[in-house]
View 1 (tube, helix red, strand yellow):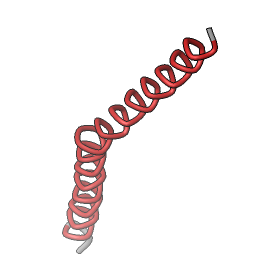
View 2 (cartoon, one colour):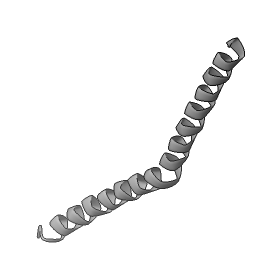
View 3 (cartoon, helix red, strand yellow):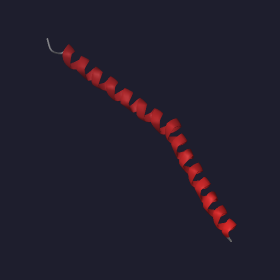
View 4 (cartoon, rainbow, N blue to C red):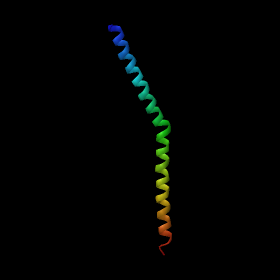
Length: 58
């Protein structure tokens, strides 16, 4: 019975590790590039707004 309990604990830990690793990998490959691109778009928008306002201040 002890080896069964150890197996369940080790199996659960391994499964949780795999799930956490998968989520981390998903975040790095999918979510992070989207967030970086949104930040870049916001910076470009702010720059364009500044240029637009300064062009009309004669």
